[in-house]
Image (tube, rainbow, N blue to C red; front, side, top):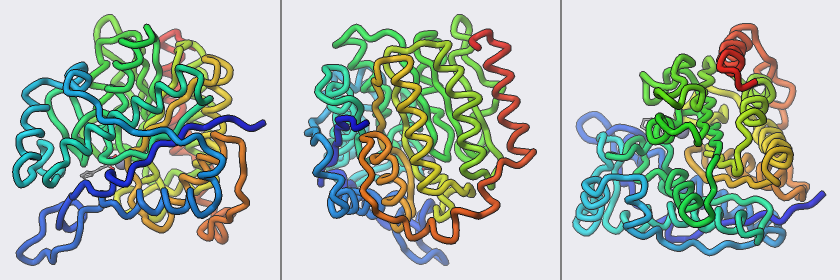
Length: 371
Ligand code: 3YP
Ligand code: ZN
């Protein structure tokens, strides 16, 4: 079955300047200048493969528009929004934690990233598309109300959710975050909100280092609206798919959201410089296919993905293409060259220590009575 999949990409996303860093850290001294891992490379090359593979012709192009200041203020403090704007009007600055560099004009690009996610959400909720992928930059899932962090300036997914609530009266929303890092931003923003379920699958204690434990389950009055699956380093397709089937699927079925938002990062790839996981393009594609199934069962297929991390310029494009093939139900026939020699890797088997982490999260879902 084929579906109409909305797709957002704007060349201006590639113009967000993260400058010379050695990946994560400022360069200088004995650290020869390189670039920030979060650069335009991986994103532009994803957009490139989507076009060259012919996938673009099968998608519904969705235009990006900037989120307004008021739309950002539904999630962020005025002090944060205005500081980013002021620094962006000057020489550039940092999102707030010293690892989130940005150049002149990045306020407008970050507003376009949040607005691109809004546009994708509009397409799905008005029925103009069945589901959608917003390939936006800068990413958003670490940004909290009062600051940016970890390459993120504004929380794109939260800005889109608040837009949906204000515009369509959407009440219950689930967020699934499979970026290799913890989705701390939405967890923090919706900690006390029982109507937004946040689920994050991530490498345990990676970033932010002290968040995303399985014991974090939501604030008073919102217990059970937050689920974390911190997976051990080395987890591959088997662990991720088991987490989707045993934690994500039952939690969402019980929560019964009207809309599912996905924070889609490809930094759980074995070629990623910022993670130690081994999810292949096949794994990402299968996760997306399961999410489509879950959305079909619980919320009329309403599924919106927004792009987060993923820093392998050579592998991320094949991961993204596999996801778009699953969303649209239209295989391109493109072969991921990295899958050859990787498909049969033992790294994909679900290992006992990974299974144990999943079982703990499963227990949270069960104990909270949502299963
Ligand atoms: C930002 C600085 C150190 C780790 C990092 C993670 C960014 C990311 O991909 N988040 O999803
Ligand atoms: Zn990440």
